[in-house]
Amino acid sequence: MAVNRCLCHGVPFAAALATARAHGCATVAALQNFCALGTGCGLCVPYMQRALATGETDLPVLGSREMDLWTAMSGVVAEGRR
Image (spheres, rainbow, N blue to C red):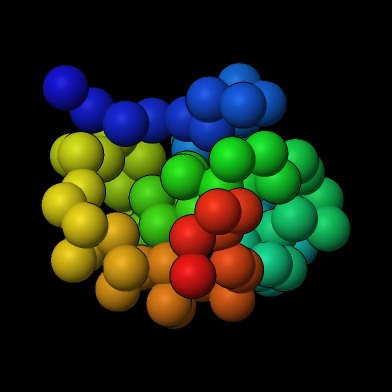
């Protein structure tokens, strides 16, 4: 099973990645100036940061350790996660 979109807002990672590239966004925090991705529950934040870093948009389900790593790199604190 692949994770490929923000579930709260229905934003596909492929579309968000295209937006990020068009506007020079390197972090999810910067990308949020142009789309709502990651502004709901925040669970898509580490997936989108990985997409920004690798160009992948169909991502495997992340374990908690990997999720924490990518969240730390995202520039965004996911709601409900510290």
